[in-house]
Length: 299
Image 1: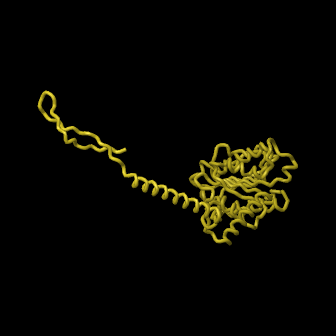
Image 2: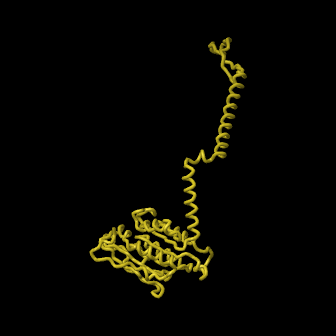
Image 3: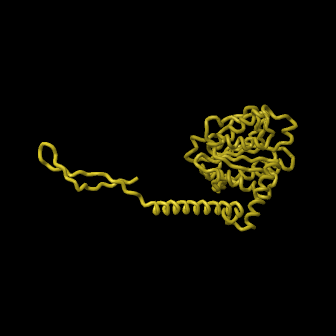
């Protein structure tokens, strides 16, 4: 209800002083009912059209999701699905598991790292029975849990029959990743899972000086550069009857980062993979040949 003020034509004198007062009175103004009805119907119509538009869009999205959400050609989509299925099949049938740990200042996909380059080689179709992945040392527990997905999941240690059917484990870590792979090996020891090969490349850490007894073959590669005072030079074997130190090499003319690309690291890992795939199980077949003193091993 609207109110308007209108002046009253009656002027009355005020008592006692002779002044006049103009009386203001309120009168009711009836609203225009026709305009209100038209405005209300217009708002209702706009809301209805909006609801209909939203409903039609949702219906189109549900009936034709490819036209709304996908811009890929059909062949590319099928190829992507085939790749995913191939990776899933490999994860369930792998005979060798490679876990790489990069340095603390790198990403897990740094393709300049030899650790990642070895991973890429093992992910190729040439090695269909190998599962390979790399992680940052700051999330090394994620790598450990990824490894466990390839083994029976139950509390306690694995049985002899379970280990006979389980894949073989290879660990390679650079810098802080060297400490990380030793930590992974210790956690695998609690499950009774052996490590066929553990390679530490210019390893940096406090608890990376001792190889646990579940490591069968240990190898070390280190460089003589500014990081030399901080890196691990020697490693103690927790049980020499179970673990063999097959390599302890100072790579000449290599830096803390380039040492990961020393071809002897790659050759050692690939030789181990091929040996395990052939069922030979003798790691003594795979030490790297010595390089000449004048040769630069890291490229």
